Image: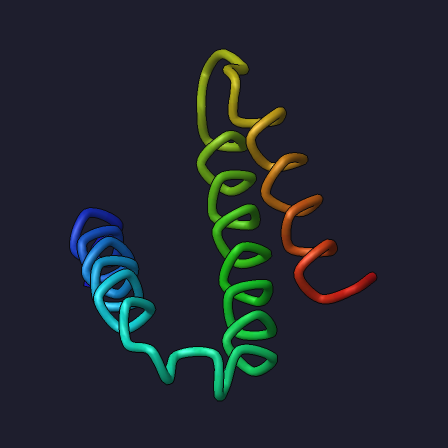
Length: 78
């Protein structure tokens, strides 16, 4: 799987989560959902860091990485 295919899986997962969150029972597993989203955001930040490392010129990814990690920490209660 290449990075484009992986990004499509991430997007599809996010779309599924949006649909699942509209279920009135969606809060039953919310703590686990927050932990999973937190871990996913940390992984996305790592992926951006990897892409940034391969880029010839630095771009806005550094700020995005910091923002993703900050949200991940908030969701995980860190």
